[in-house]
Length: 304
Image (cartoon, rainbow, N blue to C red; front, side, top):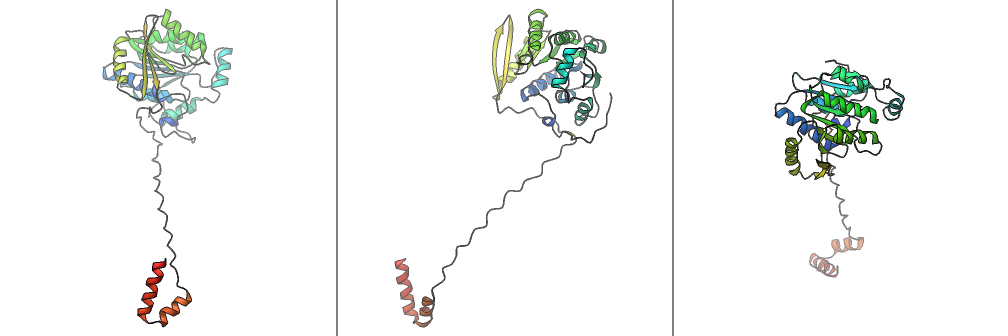
């Protein structure tokens, strides 16, 4: 794998510091699907189409097993293949550079994944068919490109591999919605579950993984859950409650513990001013006999 040097730009200390759209619910689901594959002895490569600043790629890289390869494909601000894609890239990803992605990724990992700086249309030539266990599609939002990315994922995945489609129901990405549901209705894609942003599916049998997923989610109080049927497919819908926190993730090598904040010192009590006797009282105390002085004091105290 390739390596790169860190730059003098601000380095992320935690995964949440990396720019990008990767909500806690999807971090939870990515972690669960990948860990399920690993504990079940499933092996295969990882693939991400569209990486932005590397937030989801960093999590994927945490699950790379010995002998597996992780490939990331993105334009990284390079030349788009057509006018519509160029316009989309200029509008949404003008700040994206490969250098920023590599800086963020290497904050958490010793080596970079295999990085392909090109349109995702090159992937069928770069990744062998039937070698991937997990594919994340988050590249172009244009229908024609998403349709082709889904077709590539179908060919590259192992029989029970998982594909994740981002922005399948966002109002600004209708092309992704059309390509996604077209794949479900006409191209054999079987949904496993839906989050607010992503559809998780397979071209294998979804029922075993769905049953395990449902068992996990039903034990949680921080994720909303419902099950619906549509066009012969069981749709497991998930929704994050506001108290949901992302799963634990290792700090980057640049993380520093926050300075402990000392509790504020308690306020110093203001001393109660002592009443100073008047001059007349002082003279009386000095001149009168003690027995009279005590009587006067008792009388004054009774009047107070």
